[in-house]
Amino acid sequence: MLPSSSETIAETRAAVASARSAGKRIGFVPTMGALHAGHASLIRAARLDSDFTVVSIFVNPTQFGPNEDFTRYPRTLAADRELCGAVGTDLIFSPTVPEMYPPTSRTIVEVPALQDVLCGRARPGHFRGVATVVLKLLEIVRPDVAVFGQKDAQQALVIRRMVADLNVPVTIRVHPTVRESDGLAMSSRNRYLDPTQRLHATCLHRALVAAENLVANGERSIVALQSTLAGIIQGTPGAQLDYAEIRDADTLDVMTALDRPALVALAVYFGSTRLIDNTLLNF
Ligand code: AMP
Image (cartoon, rainbow, N blue to C red; front, top):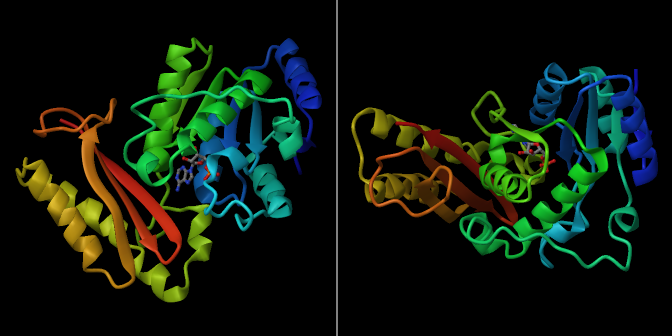
């Protein structure tokens, strides 16, 4: 069965209010659509922890830079509805841009430091756009629990920080990355890759696994690990390294020694397509 859907904030608030007054716990998964099995697993996780699951589908213009892929970002609403129905979504919220950003809107949310490193360097303003839209969506849906993917580790950290700092009454869950059978992290942007790029795009996962193996065998030098990561990417045809970094898993601070939980994060271009992936090292 296809889920109900709403394009307006008022209708969404009314549907959620009626579920809540029936005693239901509200789960929420924000997305930009072009849904795949990674999104599906987030929706299933939200369902397990709630009685009424809302999925938002909104390609948020404010998180795209001027030369990024906002206009060509895949929009597949009919297929997205089917997927949402198959995994048991109760309500899809797919607002228009003016519904979310009327011409009078001015307020933005910034999460300094966390937003400036890693992906924030190549994508200035990206995390401001993400934090602002996610806060708006949380205010519209008012969920008990919201589920995000570890695939976008920096995004999850920015949102956790924002929710804690602004006392937003929601539990944030971060769900593991869902991968293709050859290890490539699922992403709506994978469909931009031509067959050769798609083949070589496994280098991100291979690099992360190589780093994990080195650490399992006792390697503790951040410099050595980062150079292994970079070497694997730079040795892959068509791949251009944006960054390969190991940082504190909570603060994203630079680490001098591998003495606490760390995030290994990669961003790699194939042509104009930018892919990211990461893994956590726990001690
Ligand atoms: P997006 O539609 O790309 O903005 O992603 C919406 C949510 O799905 C975000 O919380 C992402 O981190 C999450 N997500 C995207 N790809 C994956 C994946 N392969 N595995 C798990 N979560 C994912």
